[in-house]
Length: 429
Image (cartoon, rainbow, N blue to C red; front, side, top):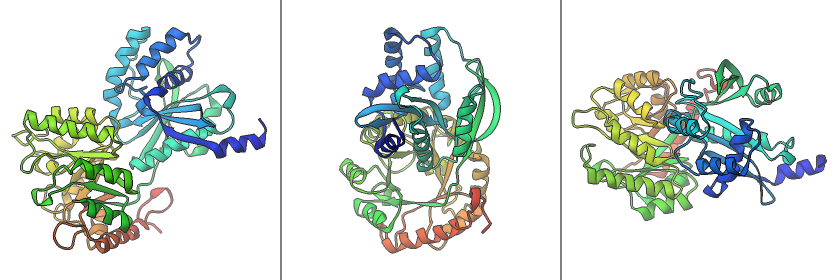
């Protein structure tokens, strides 16, 4: 292939999320990436069965596929570090059973606050045409979409060309360590997190208003008079399929406290699975025990049910009796973010606690400041609390979001975002 054909490949290459039918290709990606020799049909079949699972590191669920003229030509396995410990606890024992390799003593490759690019593979005849680079860039783009502050990978010390490529993309060497019994270099890229607004949309009409006003994400719910409940499924599907924004769905079967019966919890899990299976970008839940502690068991089960969907722990956190302990438990469970007013009625009143929460979180989980957020105070909350995300219904009267108020809040946030400059350093022009 000449330069002309190389350009044709770049222009006609498409990147898509994997489906379960891609498991054989994902399996080969893993085997090739680790340098497995003599890949027999039996070995590939076993690895394919492994990749068909949803609860392992090398699942098809974590893969992006590259296609050229209908042919799959490459793959990258990438996932959120917040799920790494859980995925590893399932994956490594299976690997030991499959081939006898014991990696149980190995340090974690990634963790909360990082999107991890694990394994990259391009079909041999399509190598050196920029396909691997485009897959890498797609992984980085996913990191930005998910608003994760860091993207990471490891690369063998014996692959200087790969190290050079990653540096050219913006990765920097962080440290050296042993992984899979070989020396690797950990490389990371820090990503700027410009301020954003999540609109609390209590109806389809409010969701459409938010989209029209230019919002990029909503928390979809109903019955704000009860603190917000799970919206109707038809409304969920309409938002996901028709509106050009991210729809995070509140999963809450009733008002009142956050201590749920077994039957209520089954309803919650059913709603989470419905969202997961219908392409919903994210869900919002929260669980407490009667004593005011985080219900870790239910919280973890909900995260597992969500799979690869980002999952927010809502303002049940503000009723937690020990937020410092609760924060660590929520992070360990694998949540993406916490919606909180700093344990006060409004985010402005909770500014000092929000600062402390943001400091303790230290980039491991996003802190979404909400309650009483409007066009007059959104920028101040971002500036004082140090958060990059705020949440508000932007309503003027009643429970419906107002287009002008959303637009004014977005503009205030945009102006606050202008203080972000090179490398995301805040406070300089």
